[in-house]
Image (tube, rainbow, N blue to C red; front, side, top):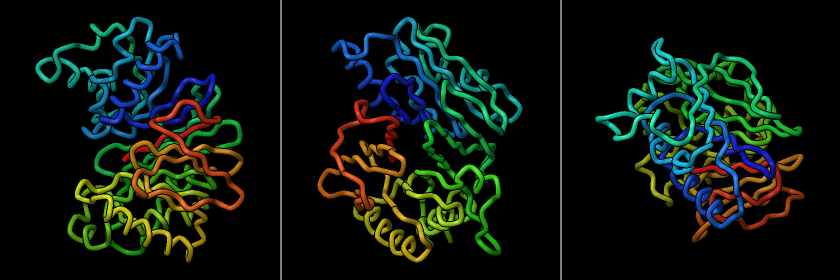
Length: 299
């Protein structure tokens, strides 16, 4: 999620973590810290379950006046609205979209640039299983690229798709698929994901400043994520990637002209090395009060 004071949030995919953010927004609203219905935009990479299951449980949509603009690539020729209504209705969910007090607006999105308030968003095709976007978001001279699910080449050199390179070019923060180690990828080469090492290669080839390892394999516990982070940093040092971190629930990255990390790292888990010249701060939750723009990264 991209957030900042006075700006409507831009949410990157709508998985189960959306419930946590919705509860936090609702709590602040009840405390009088917000006072207005939710208004924001979601950029969906694709519609696999792990990217959309938070939609029915997003509490702010239960308030009249709430508005959520939903962007996604067309799936199998069907408009986004029809696809979402297909699973947000009985028998899968007891409430239909039209019955929600809040409003969801659907945008069938093509590759290319468009505006979300004062942010410039670029959508590009990413190799995965089915139609999948990656996104680049730019605002106030700072940039974030989000490539959540990325099929690593299975034969020949591990080249990077030119469209992926373009949206990742020189970004302050690259949030990238890092599901497998080499042995796991050899067992599941066509599952639509990539290795930690390939994520580092994408960051190196595109000139990204900070890489956030994301979309961890569900079978990886914290210790394994930490081990993969160590190996990723070793490769990053060789490939000239300045900073590598591991995404986890509650992690907040505050973007300045270059990346400054504000993080909540319970029990010493996968945090970040302090970048040169940056000042670390502690931040809690999905975070709404740090300097603009703020990126909350989970998984």
